[in-house]
Image 1 (tube, rainbow, N blue to C red):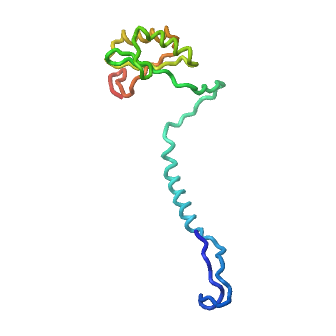
Image 2 (image 1 turned 135 degrees about the vertical axis):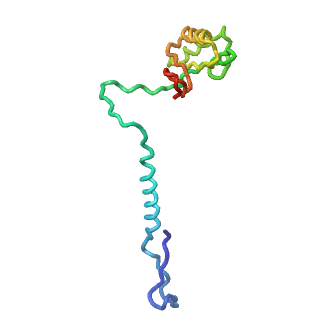
Image 3 (image 1 turned 90 degrees about the vertical axis):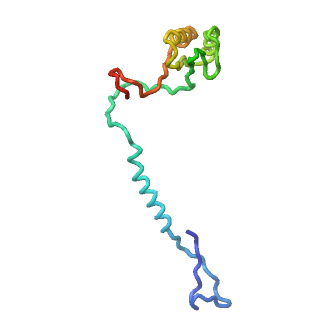
Length: 157
């Protein structure tokens, strides 16, 4: 793609003494550019169908407004297998849980919280933590689980 030079007229390519010097070439070789563009076109033609995976459905039209984007990340509360409670990644004694949650709730705009509990923790302990979350000002509690578990008919997904 570089510009080359062409020799002056006559003489079989030898420069004449006192004659004209070489002149810059006025044409650009576009063949490498076309080759690169064709390769990119082929790559995009092959890759484009792979990017659209899903089920074709026609959604109904409604007058509902779209949901607002979340400005802050939801709070995560974890109940470990040994019964310890963590807010985020810091361990909190159970007797201080409600007061810490109330302090956190005053600083946050969103009252959404994700509750993660180990599968071996008794349901009563999870219910106590959910009650503490409610008393702490968090009303929107989401239980976090792993996918691929058993279904109601007993088969694994």
